[in-house]
Amino acid sequence: MDLEKGSIFLKKDIFLECPSCGYEKDVKYFRIDCPRCGYPSALFQIRYSKLPQEFPLKGYVQSILRYLPIMPLEVDEIIDVNVGNTPLVHAKNLEKFFGLENLYIKDETRNASGSFKDRGAVIGVSAAKALGYNFLNVASSGNFASAVARVCTVSGIKCIVLVPEDTPDEKMVMIAAYGGKVIRVKGIFDECRRLSIELSRKKNILSASWDLKPFTLEGWKTTFLEIFEQIAYNLPDTIILPVGGGGHILGTWKAIKELSAMKKVDKFPRIIGVQASGSAPYVKAVSEGLDYVPSVDNPQTIAKSLKVSSPLEKNDVLKAVKEVGGTFVDVSDEEILDAVVLLGKMEGIFSEPGAAASIAGLKKLIECGKIDRSEKVVAVVTGSGLKDVMDVKNIFGHFPLVESGSSVEAILSLA
Image (cartoon, rainbow, N blue to C red; front, side):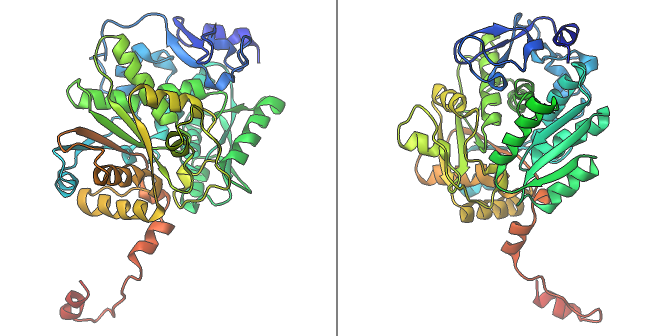
């Protein structure tokens, strides 16, 4: 790949900044680590030389286009503008159940491939296409892979997908249906990520889950930008998100910082990340008062989208959450499954286990007295239950079977 080729694409008023030492570089050098401090290139963040006067733009229906002034791509470079625009649901039933006054759910199950990952994928893959790449690989527990495979097939890019061996069949089938070549890897996500980076470095097959992180982060931040619009250009007091690697939290933080820089907001909402108890490196860092995030050996949870041993962006995520007065909490698998049921029966939202962690975390925070009744709370539900049915299916047990000639009385006796 000719580095100079990238200089004619993307926006001209953007650059990459090292979050460790502040070193700045041209976006075309997005694969090169910081020459000053050695910080990984994937953890650099895109900055905008000019802050927009008009934001969001009023002339577009699609949210991604309304946020163009703080997107790294020109309008005709975005492969699919029909992601996002997901509803912010006033969760009146759960609100009453929890004894809250202002509870909202950001329902990311409505995205194109069923999760918030579509947001990052469309910006990341669009950037790769604009920079001239036609072959990508991606490491994922399933949701990001299906999102990337979908955008790749739309844009004519070949895609290799590396998933952990316990990835639900539903997710692998979706990836294959989108044209991605699915390869299962023994171990957890961390092993997939290592292979993904090797494919990039040794074979020049760009890694969507590593090389493109600065671009995918720009997609993650649109979740919060939509929330900001949907509550009448205001802010919640608290936003609660499930956490695996932490990219969604980092994108949320970046959106808040940019809104502040544009003088659209004058305060920061509290960000709370929820992890599964068997895979909770961020919770360990907070509970032990650490300024770094330790690795977790052999993480275990049914919430496969949250199962990560050592998130690469971990220290940046921890710093971001501390900056806005947030924290991390952990919930058990049992609490997660209870939250799946609560969401379905009370708000009509069917979520995968990892996505329901935000509701499980909310319940725990209320019980611990860490959420005030009058707070305006937004809980983000990140992915559809149709993507991981097996563990949820077990909650409901045996479904009764009756003969075709059964009486209506027999039917009602089973209701």
